[in-house]
Image 1: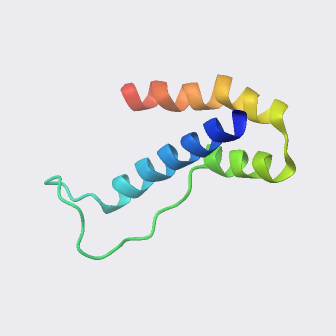
Image 2 (image 1 turned 90 degrees about the vertical axis):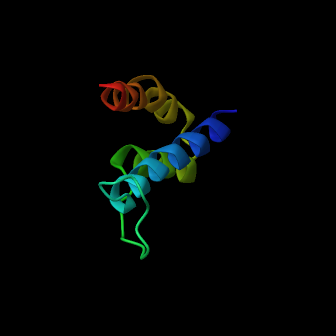
Image 3 (image 1 turned 60 degrees about the vertical axis):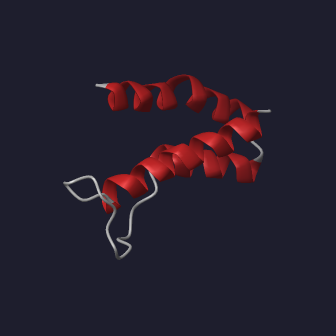
Length: 74
């Protein structure tokens, strides 16, 4: 269960970063791919998946990801 949630959060954060890097000011996507960085929260979740660290992943769900969502809404 927590692994599925981690995968969804990682995908959402990476998609958000991709669109931020590849979206033009007029709202259209760039014709050529521009590299984007994977957010730190997503990197930490990938590490948690690799180590099978459920406790740390759940703490990220509760604190760090909620902060990301709050910043996104603001």
